Amino acid sequence: MMLLSAILPTFLLSAVVSGAPIRRQASKTDILVYQFADVLERLETEFYSQALAKFQDPDFTSAGFGNTAIPKELFSTIAGDEAAHTSIIDSTLISLGAEPVTNCKFDFGDALKDVATMAATARVIENVGVSAYLGGANLLENKELLVAAASILSIEARHQSLLNILNTATSIPSAFDMALSPSQILAIAGGFISGCDLGIPANPALKITNSGTPVPGTKLTFESAGIPSGVDTSTLTCQMMTGGAAFALALPFDNCVVPNINGPVYIFIVNGTQPLLNSQVNQATGTILAGPAPAFIDSVPETLGQVVKAAPRAVASTTTISGAEATGLFNAANPADQSLSPSSTSEASTATATSSAAESTSTGSSPITVLGWSTTSGDSTSGDSTASSSSSDPSGYY
Image (tube, rainbow, N blue to C red; front, side):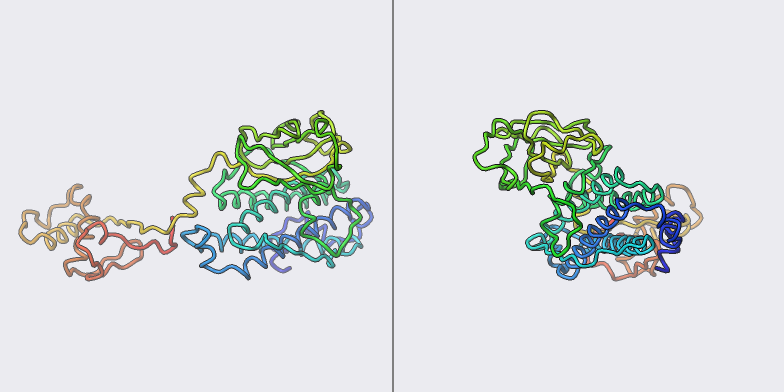
């Protein structure tokens, strides 16, 4: 908490420290929203804790990460953020005279079977976290609590972008995110949670039964306890909600073909053809039979994700030295050609400094220091001057 008090904005600290004034203003709904957020933050914290405890460098390598430090650092950072969120929400609930929700159990099952599945699941969890905070904004009555929740929402959105990159997808696929209600959130996350009950009914979960990853043109099939047995499916629609759209795309249940979209999509099964509004204020939730089910349609992968997964590269390092030093190095590397005198300090001699310095490392000249790293004679095992002029990037990537 010492570190939290040093970095949290004053409005969030007042929500924690000045308990009495906020206690008079917080409604039962406000407390329920924060308790629900508490459960989700604990879910995220436990997910990353289990993942980091289970997976080691070889697991990340098997998942295609050339530099295992990158995903491990990012997952560790996200885990720390989620733990901080849990701590501050607990403190806020206590300041409001309410109890944190500590009796939930979390079982992630096959979501942690390997790094690739874990990273894909983390992407869903963070996307759902963003939607949960957006949906909760519609329910909070206390403005101070609303702004405090928004300060967490923005961090969840950053996690979302980082995980898009780790999954070699578009980092920011849309200019807008989507809000979901608590019941809709539980349709997705409820399968991981047991042992606690906030009194919030969950929408029936919706499972996409297709094998493989959906892409534009994929005809989706579903199963859900919320779809009545023997129902006339011609009366149903599958509805796809995407960021920035005013309403969902309503398609026939039996011909639910993924359109040419990119990024996250929430899919609902609806009784009727009226498109759902992309609004938690005005959405006709009574027609929803099941869902949403989350999916990612990664039709526009970014180069950034490929770079993150690439193996570390040796990076050529350069330095600028004086003309006289360049001449000396040149003459040492080329004893048959002494035509350049030490007094020649032209721009041309300076321009050859990098290649000359590299060549000198193979001929026994004294060490030179390049960007803080020493290149010593005899280090090179090759006569290639370019290889001799390279030093490994200490970070392992660039």
